[in-house]
Length: 366
Ligand SMILES: NC(=O)c1ccc[n+]([C@@H]2O[C@H](COP(=O)([O-])OP(=O)(O)OC[C@H]3O[C@@H](n4cnc5c(N)ncnc54)[C@H](O)[C@@H]3O)[C@@H](O)[C@H]2O)c1
Image 1 (spheres, rainbow, N blue to C red):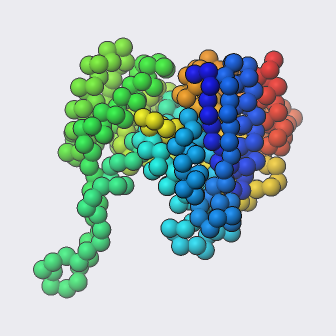
Image 2: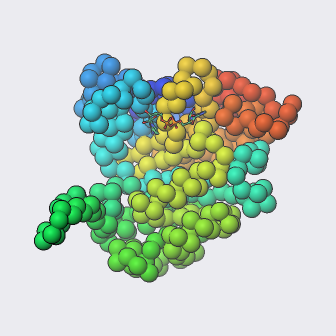
Image 3: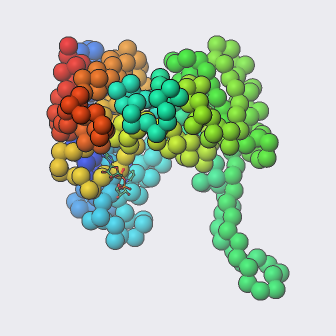
């Protein structure tokens, strides 16, 4: 891609602080890679509520749909917490994801060598850990119908039942499967499909479709694992994984477990991809406790730009350069407060959000 249109929605709290650093990296890479970047910005979340009374306007949704990629900071904060859930800042995020029809959520879990001490596992278990969870994002039990809470008929005294439906069509499994196989092709070509096919019919169909799809990707080694075992293997031997593909519910849980292994929420990027649209955002929230203090770690937002460069610009070599620059900055001892280690002593230097962003840019230029 030689021309890209990006909509930036920085949002609230530390969202704007980290997004400005991420956009600087994007501008730099586009300039160096010969890509013409058209970037627009729109109020989002609480910032949009303050201006327009809603967390996302129709105009912003249209701009997002017209862009090649949306870069999001974070939304929400105590100022808007009293609002009913339909009007809250976080609702803007759900509306945006739905409007963009992004069904594949990619959450890398990479342990940077310099942050080994921040990982809760023993270094020899986690060293070199580098995998991606591909989670189905707009189907499964979170959306399945019927759902509800009802009175159980015929019960002698009032018995109430809550229920949800876990369902996937073969088409839904196929499209997330294809997305995951494609990701695996750009990595070590190992795909682990995680399900509960020994108990759930919906998982049995999932496994059947994944297996059939595997025939079209003979270059990718496909394996299957039950979700309970996967949760255990992530702790026992996370290095065995390259790409994990799984349903909405299982992916929600496993991607957070995987994220915890990387040391800090300030290091976690994400991409949500659909057939026509793409949304890139750090996993963390608006962190009201540190907003405005220059303490936010911008690396999750910067690594989200690396994902944009990889998946939307299709320039994996430049995505790697961004990751390598982050690696070198960390190796040089620079740390935002969230990733500083109490026992590192003089080997590390605590820096602000903008100093960390500037250090990544400097490494990219060298
Ligand atoms: N995608 C999103 O926009 C998103 C995600 C989660 C929460 N939220 C919203 O954010 C607000 C705060 O939620 P929360 O406190 O539960 O989660 P949070 O992720 O904002 O913060 C959790 C903790 O991690 C720290 N932290 C988060 N990001 C950091 C960074 N980049 N650098 C350094 N430290 C960082 C915070 O200081 C805080 O101590 C709420 O309104 C919530 O609804 C938004």
